[in-house]
Image (cartoon, rainbow, N blue to C red; front, side, top):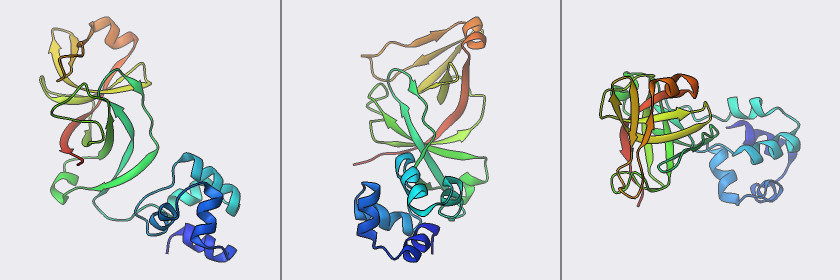
Length: 196
């Protein structure tokens, strides 16, 4: 039993009543209680107020416990860079073989600069690492704030981030900009999970 279900039953309220208090659909509460998804930031704040417990308490005791389940963290732009949001919006399972190769996380894609290969709504599985080989697809953090997914080309001491969609221009950074902005590789895309 997850902490949310436990707290709800102690309060003597139904899933429907809790959903109404959190401004979500009853299905969302059911998914939280089964440990399949986590509440978003707004729902966590409301749950914390309703039950009088900390958000940390809600998160720690409601996290799905599958050994090869990784969090899908917010959204990453396949377009112009956008603020990197690190709230957990879902979970994806990965193989034991993949899990053995390092720390992974998922990102849901917004935008169309990487179409037709990577489309809006797809989830990319990313291995956390601060380096990437020339020509690989990476998740790049710009200004310590904005994340984008692009093909990474190393040209001398600079970097060029290449979109697959020809409607978008490459992002070019000099060696100086890589340091001063900064421009940081945060992971390599190792798998694409398309949505239909």
